Length: 339
Ligand code: AKB
Image (cartoon, rainbow, N blue to C red):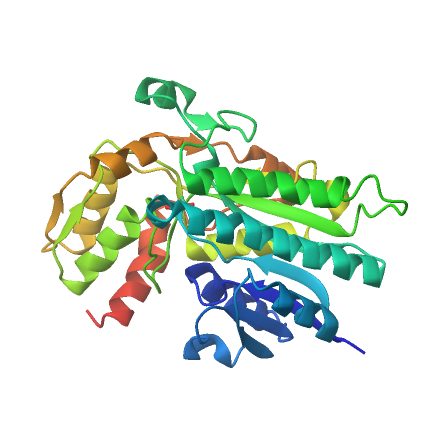
């Protein structure tokens, strides 16, 4: 019979590292960790089997479908917003066609097992498009159904994939003789910028926050690519991983939405710099604005309203702006760089 597993794509990414460690700590080890690269040594002993493969490889999807009985899919593989603007076609391929392949795998697994397969999809504040700074400021913390007009390929990919997930859950092949709906239990979170002490993201436009902090810890000069007054929501990576686990554990009957905002704090770039300097007073943090990347961040919300997540599945961040640095970022980052 097929081996029971949990499938994680994009396993070698920032979120993949955190999720695999968290699932393993909770006693889950039947993880198939899929990535384009060889799985990092720090997590390779936490999974049942690594698979080096591409989410666009339909033959590989067939092989996975034949060999494993999947109970949940965490589809993390993606090209982030900045990289997606340099390679929009590749971004669409991975972020949309890749997601379609994994949703199709989930639907086939659900049909053959006769039950819904949980599917986690990491969406993003990039699905929002605020038309100008005046509107961004007056809108303040926005709800999931506001300003859903993305201005980047990444944001377009994410909002369409959210809709695909709902389609697979509620209307998949709706003209088929057999009712094929309900075999995918699609759950998604629109993540803000995420700051990890363990890894530095690549290819994101919210990366100015983690880049600034890690450069300061390494004693490297850093030029922030956005204005001092730039403001978007953030959270720490441990809180992002907790949010994923909490949402995936929530009873389906409690979920009034398939897509949820979460956030923990929304500092300006100036506040991030001041906070970083308070821990690394000799850090050299300058500003060299990238007008094009600035325009992307200006289209993202000043903050998000996460009340639906709090109500439906008891979302509650552990780290606010102060404790993010004092309890998580500084203790870990100073240990990693031995400073
Ligand atoms: C990015 O910067 O592209 C991502 C995001 C905000 O989803 N971190």
